[in-house]
Length: 269
Ligand code: DGL
Image (tube, rainbow, N blue to C red; front, side, top):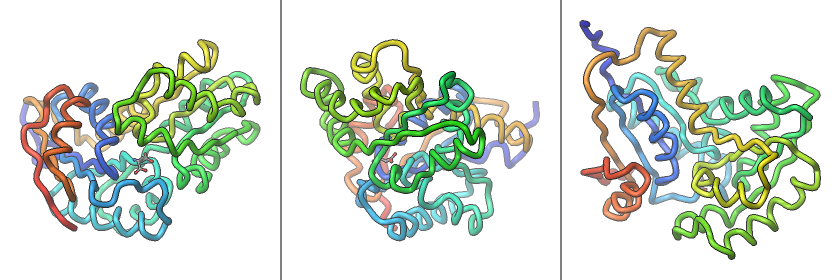
């Protein structure tokens, strides 16, 4: 089948660091033919503790870099950047752009039975109420309970995904949500899917865990299908850019993506 020129253009994905590779992994699994460009803003990570203004400035620079690299759409893989800057970026960027908040919100609103949803994320994401606002658009009667879990990101970065200490920390953070009798919890941060098994141990098997990465991949596929921009032939090629520490990114990133990263280019913005 003849490929239209736009279809073989890459999808741009960005995050504050390597956490967004969870979203990239979900996209490559669902759409292995797509070309992708990933940008990790490793010089400025973490975004979760920074102001809306500064995160939006970083996000704008990265989006413009991706557009200059001829992407056909942009996925903001970072929850904090999605919460703070999606609305603004939609106004100034001339390719379709989506964040990670909507997909996880819609999915959890669909599956909750008792209409009590817990949202965990960075300080920035929780303060923004972005998940809650999105869920309320879908169903006003749903009650959301949010909790910032600032220690989760460094735990994952250290590779402490399981073990007693991590389990105890998760217990402390999630105690209030469990007491509220939530039946669904949204992992509203790029790093949290890596803690999923340990979170499951702590919360038991009766609470649904919504990991927005796979929900976002489905949303990307839907959008590309709708615009007739899906790449139909060949295997996808991947390019990686970071604003600092390409070697470290490559080492950690390969654990995430199963050795798919051969080259990482440093790019200061
Ligand atoms: N990527 C961020 C998020 O999903 C987590 C790491 C950070 O704070 O930058 O919110």
